Image (cartoon, rainbow, N blue to C red):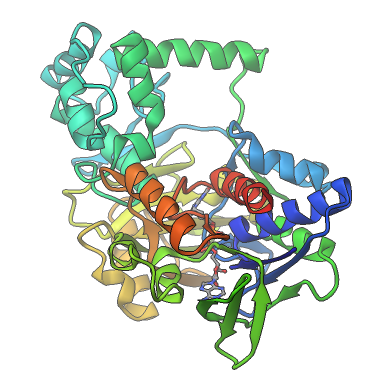
Length: 462
Ligand SMILES: Cc1cc2nc3c(=O)[nH]c(=O)nc-3n(C[C@H](O)[C@H](O)[C@H](O)COP(=O)(O)OP(=O)(O)OC[C@H]3O[C@@H](n4cnc5c(N)ncnc54)[C@H](O)[C@@H]3O)c2cc1C
């Protein structure tokens, strides 16, 4: 059976690896080939090495609690290259000042009374309103999706949402809280509400369970990367592939049904035939290669958000240490285009040479992302102006690096899960043997993408 995988990001690579595994372990007659439009693999995973700095242009790490990416790393023999993040306080800016996220918070939801009551992030009335979650009933009806904003505002009121949850959660999904789907982004909170009614009580119980399973009770980093950055896993997957099974600079233009299987037409004028096709590119490109797909227009209309990452390399002496944490978030409502800053030298000290500092800044917000299409000079200028309003930078940066991610962050708006299920169902009738997987469908994080790649590979073989 010939299986073509389109896209060499982490989803496509995981699907490819899974198919190769099935062939080797179960002796299945599978001929898997991967086609990537770019001249390099990895998609959004892109690690840059410059002057002793390891700079991530896209993702910087993965959550270890979701097992798929960690297991893949172990399976590839990369265990000894894994690094944990240094833990430290994260701060949120409010009225120009840094405020630590209250200790014991689970994704912004307070679980411990004292740190919450002492927090300078919320007013007394904001704290009182947030505590109403403890006794408010959960009035949702079964099976109905709703926006994250609506769901959390009902439980906690506006202040906790605007000052804490919005900068923390909407950053991960690059969308407005009032548009994002609860069921597709943070289904655990929906489940928690049903099980415990109160999200504070549910988060407390979850935190307790995690502490118990971690054993020692010691605070430990939740994220992992590799000593040489995330591209290490991409390089390893490429190294392990059969010779001639991965093709770069092969941009798929169109998929045409044949009597048995499909013809794949590439931008370089070549064609290839396959029995099964796994599409892992962004949704609008996927819609374009399926000219007669009934959900094509709807698929194209799935919104994406734009963001730029700006790395600023400095000597340590150039940066006045105003906060003891690993980074800070800037909620919307501030004039800044800056959304978040990671102090890489504190979170991942092995990525930065001794005596130096590295800031990784995220710029562009939902509804205010014009900055992302500006020139490098403009982006760096605006980013530095914004950073300087929060941190003291005494010397010019050693260098900067800008990466634009246009429409690259999927926005899972309300009803997303149902839409994706409908597309899959339509695809199975109109293009049997063609499958979709990746960040635009069932999870954005790297472990979610690995899981989707593995699952779609198994599905393609059935
Ligand atoms: C700035 C940023 C920071 C992030 N931070 C984190 C983080 O810290 N942790 C985390 O877990 N996640 C993070 N994410 C999310 C995560 O990086 C992505 O969701 C994930 O990498 C997407 O993988 P993918 O394989 O689904 O898609 P992609 O990586 O987009 O891969 C798709 C591939 O398809 C190729 N392609 C496109 N069109 C064609 C075509 N016509 N023919 C052939 N090939 C084609 C593309 O070139 C690309 O290589 C971040 C994302 C961004 C943008």
